[in-house]
Image (cartoon, rainbow, N blue to C red; front, side):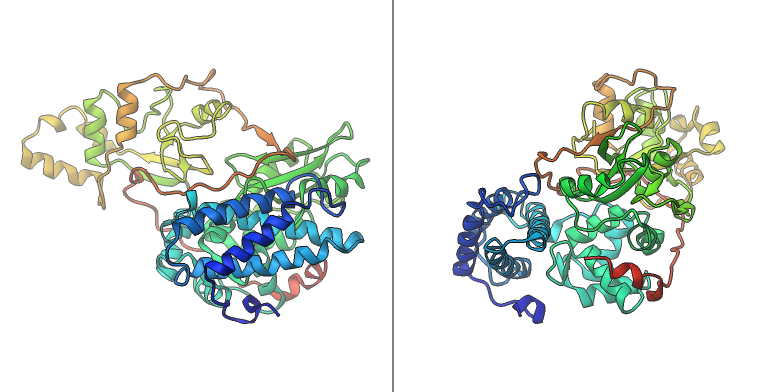
Length: 491
């Protein structure tokens, strides 16, 4: 059995990395193998890209031995490249399916390497998890480490989200451990917490969406979704969903249209629950995997109110000096901000975001790739409104007294990007109809789409919130007997 699965990974040095590179080079030349699917994830292409990235890493990393992530990952690659080399020599449907799954795993490893080694330089210890609560949990439990063994991770997560024993624990590990090495990386945890948001009911969401929902499919590719749904082609509204392999951290939903076509989309800036409910209302997602009953997902409604962002005195004064207000959207200058972008934390209105994303999926302020959004409410008080006309003219002592009106301020943030935006407005153009709610677009999943690595989520500026509501975690004790039958059908 491979060293990774037996406990500690074998020591890795430059010779071992060179050996892995050589094996990947061999896999990159298998383009003529009939056992390999031609669509993404295409093993020869992934092997080539991984080989090139490992060479960059080797050139820019002076201490291989003390980098735990590299030690584990290189050993894992060594084992899996050997598996592939042996499989391609065999024939049969089972071999082809196993090769497809290995291709997906290699694709996940490549995405993780790109996220933790951008440009070949290690930045795993500063990788920023997208969801704030998940980021705080990881920091408190594991500090700046980017990789922990499953057993250690399980104990840490159990302290905030109780985990069941037996088959249920195995199912959770199978869902989270995308690279299949018995470790959980900060990148994998970021993906999981984005997929099964919100944090307050993280494992309940996972249970309902991945364990008990008949529409969930693990380790499935674009072509395999088409093949599976072909069996339901005469039942429009049949659907299944899976982790997108081209956009890790997002869902891909495949469904049969009323015209008998099979389409696949990636919901943008919304949870899977919201996408499935919207699709159900529109008659698109009615029969999970062709079954007559659509599961009731009403329990997944976000149990917490919209995040409240309290305007500080410093923010109020800054925007007043520019003849503006903090709560006003700085793109259209008409609507109030009600959306916070992830991971950068910048604020705008929903209508402007919808219009902007028709041509661009980066933050209009800082150009960070948008990975999600959350609804927020900008808190204003009657005291702020009544003091607006005279606060700046008060003596210093009076100003200090007036600042207490804003409530308990834990920090003061000046959003430099927004200040610059106001000075140089207008860019980008405002939405066509800012007062009309526009439904978010779904983007089709193309089988030839290139891998899109998750960018580092280091913020360019502090998040502009001051106080947050006290969120009470909904802790759900998960029971193994609820899923034993389903686990027998899972990889």
